[in-house]
Length: 168
Length: 406
Image (cartoon, rainbow over all chains, first blue to last red; front, side, top):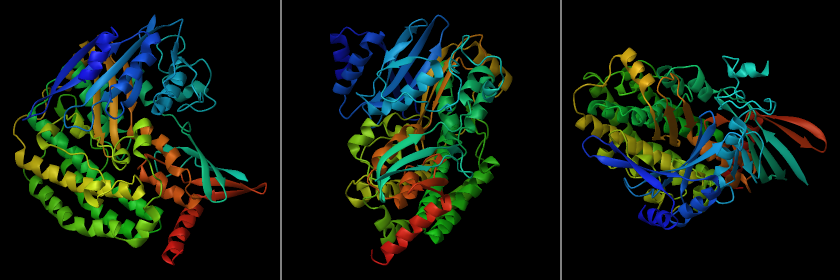
């Protein structure tokens, strides 16, 4: 973790560390490093993460929150696994304006991100630049264009209680 | 000459439909494409739009039938972080016991399926007979074999009673005594070794880059286990060690055989954890907020976000939750099941294998899906349906051929 924090400071990337206590008899602190970065620095930060990891950073998933005028993408990573109680969560948070929904792909750096990127693309309508495979991942081929289930605006399937009614 | 073989898309017996598109030359698989978009249940959408968080906890249990403790576990961890909720000590121990009981039954279920896939049905029946012991205990403790509704934000819903403990101990003893026999059947059998050694290899590098999780990545030599790396519940008390195949065989190959080794050793590990948890279990309350209506009000008022990570039998499951005050459902909810990360590892595993190896290699990651239902073989311009039974027959024939000496 120290190496990553040092490199982040060198590049003047802000971060905050959150801790949560876990355990019953033996207490441990579960650490989450939250890094807020603009879209332009996403790939640079992921490269930093790869360079400062002993093995390889583990990519878990990418989550999405719609705040109305802007949206938030959280890339969830973990680093320093393999050693007891030393693993930390790393969250890369990218905020995008609603009229400019674009992020660069990470698949060339971490091949395992492909499923998440395809999912983000179909569920939120965010364009993934240079994605090698832009097909649907979880929604079926005939799912209508312009309907994004995770959004909270006019593009979400609102007039329905069940998602499958979107087809009707 | 290359042929395209689709395997899938629906298996009636298992939950998640998926399609494998194989490109073959003769018997050898050259290219693999995984197509998951066969059926989407929209569980996250329901949790973000229709249900309140407590209803969502029960729906999280129904994401997967086999790991029905895993999703609620990750979700309670995330919500407890988001709203800063205390959990009593006894509840943390009960959660550990429930999670490990689930791991035993899930790994034994898988071992049976693996035996069936290579045509060893007597071993399937034996393994599932052994598995019944833990299912009986699950029924005794929870009142139900599958969906148990045991997790709740701030604790658990049902206690492990005093009269249950001798019966659980008896079950643990049964597994301790039976382990060597099971290990002998699976690991010393020549035919199983021929069908699984050096088949479906996932290298350590691929496992890391494709972000594989659970026994799939541990069998490739990555010492990664959430219970060890970032312990939660009462796990810090047990010093869980990530299990890699070299602990038993002295080497890491990363093939299907190694995945059997890892899962069998984990059954043994789970038995040991439950035994210690029963010995050390503290007394006291099982939930910090027994009034559900009050909990619901607190949930509605809460503001914040949380990440819950749990080591399910198949690997790391992660839930991300964002709560917004005044908004009843989750403001955002992201579920990531272990198979989500592991399906991409099919691609390097299956390349170079034979069609008859597809059932066992696909099953070796213990997917929450079944794919070997039916396939269409387009040969010489003629369409032929290959059912799951045909694929199974191909697999059994290969086993018989190997037993005759090639």
